[in-house]
Length: 262
Image 1 (tube, rainbow, N blue to C red):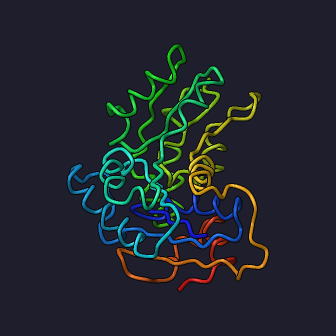
Image 2 (spheres, rainbow, N blue to C red):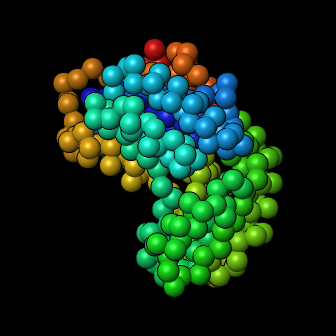
């Protein structure tokens, strides 16, 4: 079986690693857009055009499902992507994990890009799933870019800035951008208060990976006789190797070690 994932950059690594853990035999297609990123500042129309190109590049490899491993693209482009690719290829979007975070009773913080923070989309999710729970929206300017380029100093600085905006009594943090999941433990360390229970982080990678496999009817089981799983990397439509920055993260190293880029 083959699962494709798309994002503006390397934020898709977390969901790709989650797929690989659930189905070690699955071939993966990672389609991103380094030529057009970041997508956040683009108009919805422009973003949708870029996302569609990235999705169609992945679709050319005939995957069994496509994960839109990008919160921004899921907000603006998901209907267009589904209209173009379904029913032939199931398309699974990414939604911030506000519902499970709020189920713990709060207080909750949502770390997200400045474009998403305070947006009608995010506010709608809060109203729907976190009624009665104290929620703080925390903008994280520059964090996704810092993660994208594995800029260690910038990662430390942007995490520290967001942590300073996070109330000390917060018990759960929603990672509202897929890039943030690659530095989840650094975020946890920055917001954990001494003497309090461990901070709970809520990402989306595991849920979207499971949903993609559910949609294909392949959530469980592996093909033990299959050849080693493949890894196809598409950078703005070009077949390449994983970018060097991807190997700065455990997820990228795991994918590179198991798959063979073609």
